[in-house]
Length: 255
Ligand SMILES: Nc1ncnc2c1ncn2[C@@H]1O[C@H](COP(=O)(O)OP(=O)(O)OP(=O)(O)O)[C@@H](O)[C@H]1O
Image 1 (cartoon, rainbow, N blue to C red):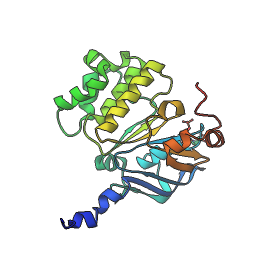
Image 2: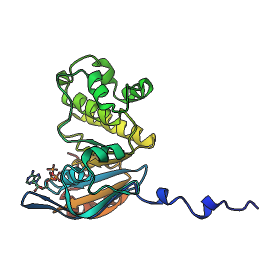
Image 3: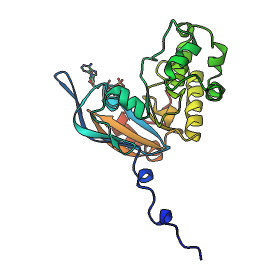
Image 4: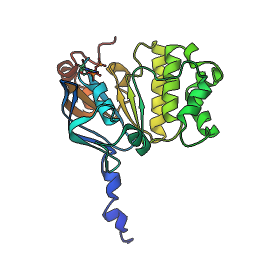
């Protein structure tokens, strides 16, 4: 019988650790105490969904991960490294891409120019652009048009394309479907499914739980600046009473 290799006996610790781990994170914005000890983990290769009512602290959590707000206590580890006190530019360089809620695109620049500016490591990689345009065909159609002329959904596609124009270890996306028509939401979700299939790790903030119940691997729910529930999406999706308690609605109630 074949002897087990050392790797089989002791898996690489890096692959056992979550890619992202927040432990007891508190954040103050000015005099306001917004996050009250957030514990959150995202495993490599998973699509983790962060849910919660308005004002629960989801956006503040993403901004704290990126160093845009400073954690006043607690720790944030990414890829085996303590990033709690790093500058935002160093956090981005460590491999985290962030798509904020307000579709951060340069309106006066063309779609192409928006992507060129986002590619920090050099010229655009044509094969990667082809791959991105494969699930966002509108980008190719409007390649030489100012991004400001695009629809809300198309701008969101540009914003996501900017974040993934070069490979990143983790993608943070804040409510990408907000205010978008159902058909656009559908194509955005298909894009996230494709990204995940290609091995991306994604932390997605989403209000509309119907949209993500089939997409998310895990669901964490925030309330009052804390994560009050974390587990497989299937558990939350299959428990109407839990949904009602945590989110004040049922996943089975279509919008
Ligand atoms: N710049 C700020 N100054 C003061 N309070 C803030 C600031 N930004 C956010 N807050 C407060 O922090 C709390 C959490 O806000 P946050 O935007 O993180 O919630 P959220 O879960 O993302 O909500 P939503 O789903 O409505 O975007 C809210 O009570 C909000 O009013």
